[in-house]
Length: 395
Image 1 (tube, one colour):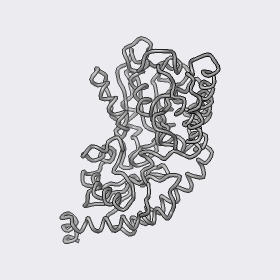
Image 2 (cartoon, helix red, strand yellow):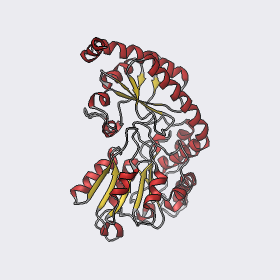
Image 3 (cartoon, helix red, strand yellow):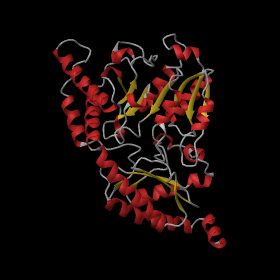
């Protein structure tokens, strides 16, 4: 049975060259904080990776902090700039935070934690295409705003947010601006200086690197209180011996994805557009969610009315095809996608959605195979659905 992987937004397979770099790094066992030759070898691997990431972002190496994942990076900045410690001057003087209604759970749930500490969190709505409403965002900003955190691209729909416009909106107002760029980095050009970003999060396993390593970009003059206290690692911002092997793998992954970013964007965009057009043509009552937004080229979110997305997922998995019903971090929940609900969809449509996320290995043959299985699955499930039968009667 042919197996097709269309869940690259959840995670990506490790690139062979990344794997080779990690295996080589395993031979460098020294502690990067040690001053002897063994330590210096490890330190050099880490600093080479740091420079690679910095160059890719248009940043300086000392502005790159290695973490364990994107979620930790998000927590570090959101908690770290709003804490009561005097090291975070803005966080002490201001008490309000603004995030969007479509953020990843690592931002949404961290914001809930802040609310429990007495902070005021504003949830900025999005339009029907999943894009932040700039006029509402501007109305929420005040002299009490400490932080604005808006994701760069949504993990469920691929909708790209107007990051540059938001940065310009808050420029000069002494407000910290953070973006979760986990789904965007390595796929579209991002220059933190041109965008005037204060903080940016990214993750290794979304770009064909290993799980267990991420990055927080921190503008040089910005301060943040550490989540983990201890030694002087990562510019005193993340104590603990560095994960040399994973950091080396991340550096190689960044190097590779930047090298073919433009060609992959075009290739995947063409495949995604063909696939969506075929789905809508061949399967009645299928709707591409956020179709009119500026989207990531590899992401497609489609609702198949009158049936449950979970049923489609399991049927396709039986055929060897891996897809998703939304964020991997929310896969244990029976609730409909908070992203799709924020876009104004009813529960039925939100529950019927499937996310197809393409990647390096995706071919047109994979999508042809998926299309055939999807058409069979939707037809079978709808024939058993009372909602579909009612719809046919009324037609």
